[in-house]
Image (tube, rainbow, N blue to C red; front, top):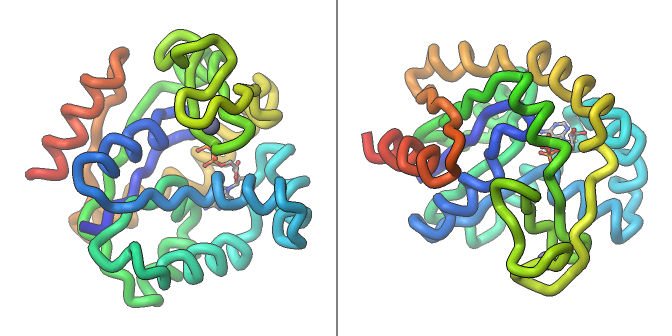
Length: 210
Ligand code: ADP
Ligand code: ZN
């Protein structure tokens, strides 16, 4: 099954991607994580992306489309994949269609802006492996330490409140039109993000089985 997760930054796409990945044994492809990795390794692409990312703006379409093309060609995508954070613009969605990639389902996780702004301040990520946590909703076993790799948990620069507002503006302007795009293809399923992660996951699975 080829799945797209849509939703505002902080709506919980990454967390739900992990659950689907466990259940269906298909990889999650997160453009955000790929770009952060490139940044950490100091590649040219990473350096180019940095200023956009830090400002809460989207990285140019051609850069992320290139990343996705390369990643989807990988063997582990043969039995399906979860796209987390791609596409984020109409041209990106069109590029995916033009690659001949067939998407089975697009799950849109809806969370009101006010709740997102509140949540983002508690978000932490592992400096080493990129796993994500939340001070309230998804605590690590040991404060400040990654469960998976014992790396240090830090706040992303773009999770600071002003940048979060900019990212939400970008989301409403550039990404939200994708709902209509996929509704027209009869692929859109809407899930209301719940207070408890497990409750959202149940709704997501129900949509995948529908
Ligand atoms: P979130 O979903 O929480 O916003 P991500 O980790 O998915 O965070 O993305 C972080 C940043 O990476 C974005 O603000 C943007 O700068 C860049 N990025 C990730 N995916 C894309 C994409 N598909 N198109 C353009 N920029 C992207
Ligand atoms: Zn880690």
